[in-house]
Amino acid sequence: MELLLFWVFAAICIGGALNLLAQKHPINSALSLVVVMASLAVEYLLLGAEFVAAVQVIIYAGAIMVLFIFVIMLLNAGEEPHGGKTSMVAKLVGIPALAILAVMLVWSLGTQAGGSVAVAGAEPGPPQVIARLLFNDFLLPFEVTSVLVLIAIMGAVVLAAPLKPHHAEQILEHLKSGGQN
Amino acid sequence: MSLGLYLLLGFVKSFIIINVYLVVFAYTVWAERKVLGHIQNRWGPTRVGPFGLLQPIADGVKLLFKEDMTPPFVYQPIFTIAPVLALVMSLMSVAVIPIAPVLHVLGFDVPMQVTDINIGLLFILGVTSIGVYGIALAGWSSNSKYAMLGGLRASAQMISYEASLGLSLVGVLIMSGSFSLNEIVHQQEGFFWGFIPNWNIFRGQFFGFFLYLIAAYAETNRVPFDLPEAESELGGGYHTEYSSMKWSMFFMAEYHNMITVACVATLLFLGGWAGPVFGPPLLQTLIPLGWFCLKVAFFLFVYIWIRGTMPRFRYDQLMAFGWKVLLPLSILNVVVTAFFVAWFS
Image 1 (tube, rainbow over the protein chains, first blue to last red):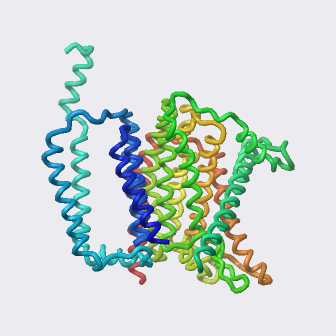
Image 2 (image 1 turned 60 degrees about the vertical axis):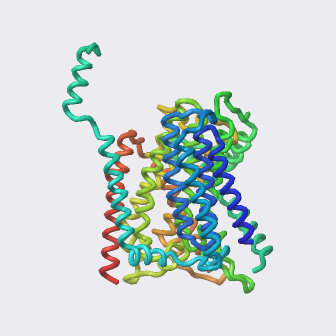
Image 3 (image 1 turned 135 degrees about the horizontal axis):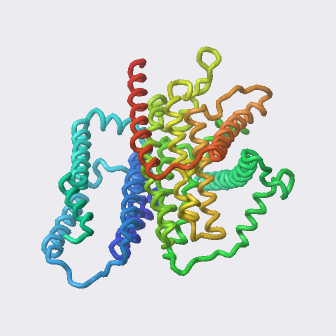
């Protein structure tokens, strides 16, 4: 039963990812990504990672993708034309990267299979286990990541900061003169 | 338990609970019209049935037979999906809410909830956060300025207040050490000092309770945070272009979310079904359910009461309040609670 559900949601996940690439309208692509995120959450759930599944839905599907949709709504982005000429960067970097990823996938499947893998339908562990991992064993990487996020936020604030006073004066001058100079 | 029995039991339970939810929804609307009427010194519905009790049925029939109009300028697929998404997500959260302790009948243990999962509370938060899509997409796909503004306001407001909503619950989670709603209620049974109920609201989460209530009112788009559908400036807000059953799906979703908020507040802060139990065995199984319903009804009444009393916020006030007042206070609540729990343990 769990194995069947696992394959069904794996298919939905990959279908959503392909649909994301195929759709022309940004909002359809964003919604396909939501489908991918949600079906990934179901996969985590089937593998016994309840807490990770819930966090996947709350953070990725519920918060980050809502912001994506929010931006698309604000910009009122229309349909994007597909096809035409492919960029040189995509050919030179994308294809080797894809090849490397494929080799890594085959290699890891070939060597790691049968090792410490989760089984579909595994019994969920208590959330305390994850808490202990995050706040005891991996405390330093966890905190460093949050500092990294903080730096990113500060960078965004600096980039979007209001104009300097002399800039504001220049704009005021411009407005006073009726937009002539 | 075999797979067939499991599916059958799940189906029966879901069927019953969804129907109960729909009836509660119908009579919350009736109560709202009646209470608002009395607050404004008029009668409210009186014509259909005694005390207007059949009014919800008349409204339902009216909405069913209205023309389901789709304006020509909308983006059809998403316009249709949006109300369904809002309604389904609002109904899903009820699956993990326990309404009474486990019932023992004929040697079977029947849990009084559709499913008991370890992370019940996180499930509710997750489903609520997906519910935002219904409103945001409705606003966008309607392709009209009022709906668009309503959708934008709703998504910005719900993202902003979701942070405070989650953080205001962390205090309770620290005290109980579990995400399971059953477990949290069990810890609130009994009394301390002989007469004060052992509810979280009396055990140091008084502050957290009000933070949760404020954030939840914003999350469900109710007065005084009902800017997404501010009728004086936006027509109908995100559902301006909707009619008939599609409109009523949004209506139902809003009221189901209100009921879910009332249930969560009851379970986390007011001790769920905990309360004095007496009488013969049959009565002893029914009284906890009665306590639970009474507490939920109280929260729904407070919702209506506030709607009859408070004016609407201005949009900048709403955002400033959410980020500059509510969020710091919720973080403070988490820190103080964590400190006390660590100190006394």
